[in-house]
Image 1 (cartoon, protein in one colour):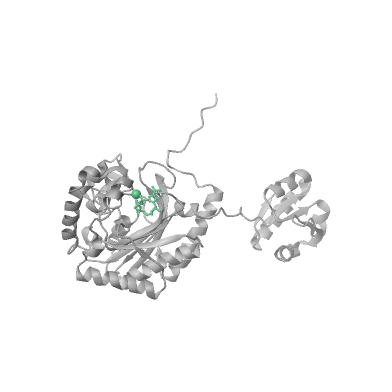
Image 2 (cartoon, rainbow, N blue to C red):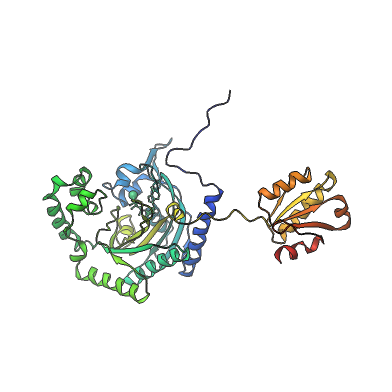
Length: 413
Ligand code: ATP
Ligand code: MG
């Protein structure tokens, strides 16, 4: 008896051809733009020591406290499926001994895993295109990073995206601000949701981006980091804004951007759309000057961002099906080998070719139709012996006899 068919794990999604074509378009835009800023691709492991994320992202964050796919393997090692790409990049940067090799500009594309509640735009396995820059000292690097993010999404031609920036301060100015914020929040704790209450002590800045409307209503006049920056952070933020203005990269300041991860300081930014409801952030990142040191390396200033591939794909129209230039129809057993050779020849000449698989002419024309081929090349015994084929243009219905070596010219004409 046949078994019940198996489904994928909830929140884990198959990339079928029509969707992958869109992903590839996004990746192609990323590769083109990132290469123009001299970024190189890295391919890093999906499995990492759990400890890496506890030490970097922080224990009190949503990701580490409840979203990681962490387990103990057969050798009793604590392992997890990476929830993001920055911590692993820092680990690889240190392990690869690249701290003395000058500025490193990296990008990656790959799956990330978070055990979140599955919903539109929120998957448990999703893909990120991310970039990291190690040795990024001043606001100038932030400017170029944000300009690169802007150029990447512009290349895709998505409209209605907005770049929002903020400064999260640094270890010199954040503690005093944090105290102020905690006092403000404690004074209103009874009006804030349960999650916010849990965050007041552990991660008070996260309260600022709570999605609950009644919390937001309560936080209207909350103190903001941008008003409490030390001189260094202030001039860094000014440098960033001036640079973006000079490059005509549009942005707005959003003092509520806090990022969910502990390691960020100074510049934080998101690119958002209003087309995806609550899951409107398509790209997010920031500066993380303390993280390399935190993970055992020398002081190294750094900045990065990551974009969610599936969320971006939702903003793009499905791409057309793969282009089939030519479908090869072989009439009669005796022509099969020859037709396979012709198909191979046409491919090596640069055409996209499918073979219709032999059988009746009617069946093979149906195959060509379903493949939406532009042309059918019909090879019968007579044609095979005389070195010509029948070439039919499926769009116009036009049919002609052409020598094999002229098919390519006809198809490209
Ligand atoms: P959000 O506020 O939406 O939870 P985040 O702050 O957790 O996002 P980051 O860790 O900064 O997100 O990840 C960068 C980008 O990766 C996000 O802006 C989003 O586009 C994408 N992303 C994050 N989590 C998911 C998910 N569960 N499913 C799909 N895409 C995601
Ligand atoms: Mg999240």
